[in-house]
Image (cartoon, rainbow, N blue to C red):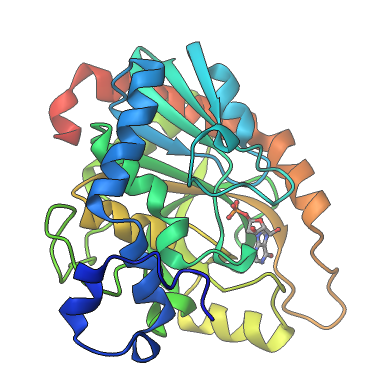
Length: 315
Ligand SMILES: O=P(O)(O)O[C@@H]1C[C@H](O)[C@@H](CO)O1
């Protein structure tokens, strides 16, 4: 028996007019967190912090220190938010941090949820819906990723201009199920997902700070196993520049909710493409991300200070 059965509203099941057994797990999981439930979670958070964030930042593996830069910070551990998922992965602390960064009100998610942890796609992206209800206008997504394109070296920052996601392409999409138009539309165009004007601004910061960056395509695999050599070669041929296990589905839900998206990867390892290559190791990945986090932190702070000068960029 699916543990969510019985918790999903009758109204939802009536929409299908079918026995529960015929409805996909993703649709049932999606329906559990109704608009009203998300609203009450957002209200609980707002009552506690009394703060209106404009920008949400999701910290990737080993990148949680971004949260420590937030000024006048109020932190809420995920464990103190009823029905919010828990972080289970090393390098993901599990706190929401509210405060100012470069003079802008932000909420920083120190720790994300990944489908390989056992969370449904809709649960992995629940925080995005809550950020929308808290009044955020954009999300900045960060992650640790393995470089496929050989121009990418360990420690490099890659601005994401597009993504390719095996889970999303194979009907593991957080938007599956009955749509609630209050969040967003049924069909979502995503060919302009990673907002060009914001990427251009990020590149200006790269020049000003003299932190070179690449721009490329992020690929999402399901994980938690890394790639075989054949997988990596296929991903590279298909057009992925780096590979990870997150981000793409979060970006889609952000676009669905009408939020602008900026995303970047820290290249923590070279995804193996030859049989002699080293094996990726998550502890090492977290260590490299944490050691190289300063560049991403500086870029994000510069980017935010430019957004502050022209808030119309995220309206
Ligand atoms: O949360 P991110 O995408 O940064 O985490 C990456 C992908 C896997 O969760 C993990 C693999 O080492 O790091």
